[in-house]
Image (tube, rainbow, N blue to C red; front, side, top):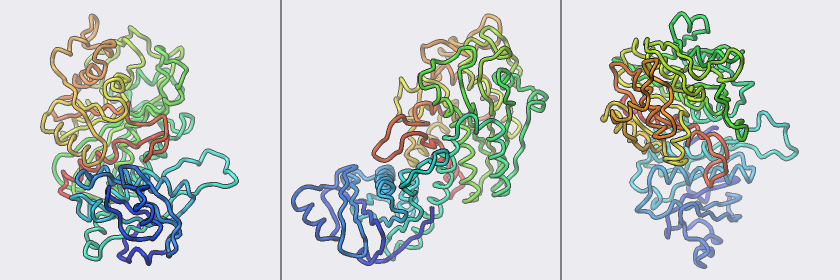
Length: 486
């Protein structure tokens, strides 16, 4: 998507669709038909409320999108309204969109962050995935260009925000498209190839460990999950060197398809288990953003990638495997596989002596019961880092909610035959999964993000298409940019 900032007066903008984000009770004077709709009380500018009119000026259509009350405007509400505008543009089949934010709808946002979140929103709402479909007779094109209308005095600041918004949007769209790829396309080796292409495009270092190298490295937990599949696993290491000092390590769960293994899942909706790679795709998308922005910070991305399938060679409940850290693990449930591959990645991360490590994983169904589809479950071993990640999530519109990691919960994972078992049963499932990971965190601040409830949505929303959400890309980017002082 091409974007530009413009300082033209609204009546002079020539576009198939001009979207205006407005606050409740305060509507700009742009078009006579709008004035009549407002005067009649048909439109008030409430959150998500829209009004489409066909204008008599240079804009073929004008779309009002409400952000709600002016006193309650946030980055998230502006981002959401921009997404609604882009989704409507896509429905209308308009390739070009012009968008302005009324003064009262800006809240306390500066021109830079306003431009950033508008572009992020348009990328969110304008997305569709059609590459695997036969082309329909009357296809609806994606939004290909955005003209962001700003005040002349805000032009320079808005340009800075546009640069960030463009990069985040690119990473976000990269991730959503990867998430949608089915398991027969997006195999572990496919994810590895995507990492290689990103490295070639942006000039960072990438190392790919194949099955033999994973075995030599001693990643017994990752190999245990992979042993039921004909597809070989990969362990992906990406290194972005933009600054000095210890790196931030981002770790993404990369189960490219999860059947549950011998502890097989129910057939209903199992096709959605292609989204079990969503943590990995978020890390890849973040590196796309890093490559475009080049912030002054060092970042390492680790992705353990594998399938989890049942077969004669698959790992079984009751088996005991040895992890990269050296701890032994009793397998209670082969569907608790994400923590197995992540524990080897967390152990591997020690060699980088990270300033912080954050993992993202569709780890537990329990987090959906606890938090639904609105918040990421967040746990960790460092209160300052937890607060920092939570703050980044608020700015990104990817909210996190902390759950406890009290010592009492460690008893859930006691094993009679090994150092630890991989499942503590139904009670406190999200906490038990995080406690398992904590067993393999050695000497660095760490936060675990359980994105099982937020990685994809089952239905259409006002601002969102059905399917993947690219959760994590905006949060990771906000975290890294603030750390870099950008």
